[in-house]
Length: 347
Ligand SMILES: Nc1ncnc2c1ncn2[C@@H]1O[C@H](COP(=O)(O)OP(=O)(O)O)[C@@H](O)[C@H]1O
Ligand SMILES: [Mg+2]
Image: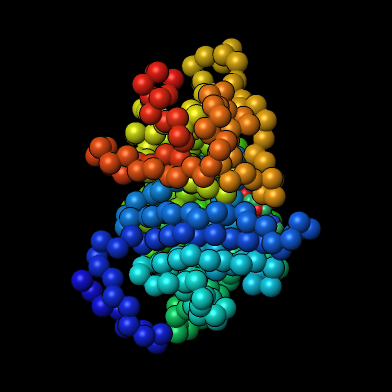
């Protein structure tokens, strides 16, 4: 057991405490339909040194979950309840100032659109150096040297010269590398990557994924990796949480999830992965779409799209049931999971 003492008091955490530990996280927004829940009682854990995936179709609540973990949701229009601990420190209830302190030093984030997060008016080197100076008391020269070092670490050639260039002089892939440099320069314990390669073309995407793996090793950072693409999860992650309509509906090690998906939605996502060996094979998209948050039912939210729905699926809350017999932790939110396994439909 180690004890952390900081200005907010004493918090104890063990070496085995996950870097990110989310329990019962819900987020409500004020919308035209009144207060509306868009993230509903999420549990999520990122052990030290691991890459944990969050996957699901657009609108399932992935970005809102990650913004909550960064303390970036607008207080006036959103309500966050539950617990978000980063390296043992509770973030829910911190002031904006305290949260700003945590960002960069404990947790950083990269987004889908790197260009939007970079300021076109400043060189990339000065944007990285500014982050260094915000967190550490170092002079301009030392901050600039750290910026160049970071650009080199994320694979920018001639970093000392390129540091003076402006964002418009970089390609999309290079801008994402710069964002990664900004995110990593203060050596956070947790990196949240929200669809970091979705806007990149395929070859650049795979270079970026390789780079993120290297960075994870080199900086010993844990990564929460958000994507709508199970193919990317297979390449990157150790374990994965599948989200649907604001809930985690299945979580498992990547190996277990791919070998034996237990939720029909996960099965549907797997069937929808294009087969690169057989390009003539038809894509099997899941029919329908994620319902809007104000239409979420209290029973199974996937039932209207599920090929295996029975009356019991739509007549009560469905718990996320842990599968105690499995060696690694896995859980599924489907009352028919066991029937479907027995019938050989999933798994
Ligand atoms: N600021 C907001 N106000 C109201 N609703 C929002 C806001 N941000 C996101 N939502 C809603 O929350 C749901 C989840 O969104 P999001 O987390 O962006 O999904 P994902 O990242 O999985 O595509 C969506 O229905 C979205 O419209
Ligand atoms: Mg998103």
